[in-house]
Image (cartoon, rainbow, N blue to C red; front, side, top):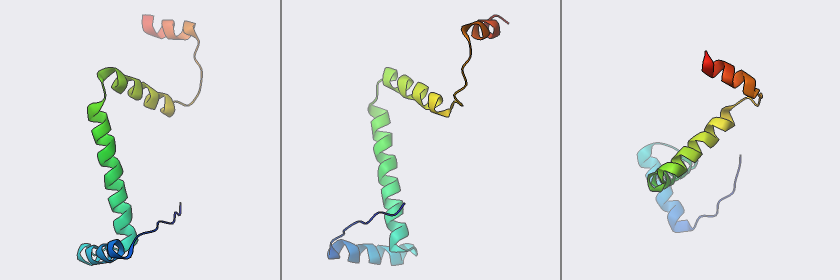
Length: 82
């Protein structure tokens, strides 16, 4: 996905200098910085969540991974009783 980001000249100059030291392009540096920022925010949010919110999120993530097939109540009890 392409997005256009406006950056002031001073920040762009700093990005160029950092990219030289890191030996990566300005674009790659920005992508890396954004990825690290998002991961840090997610980590901070996860640390502040209650156990109930963590459980809800875990269940939601598991539901996202499901293939959408439905199982009858009878089949569930049959598996549980075996």
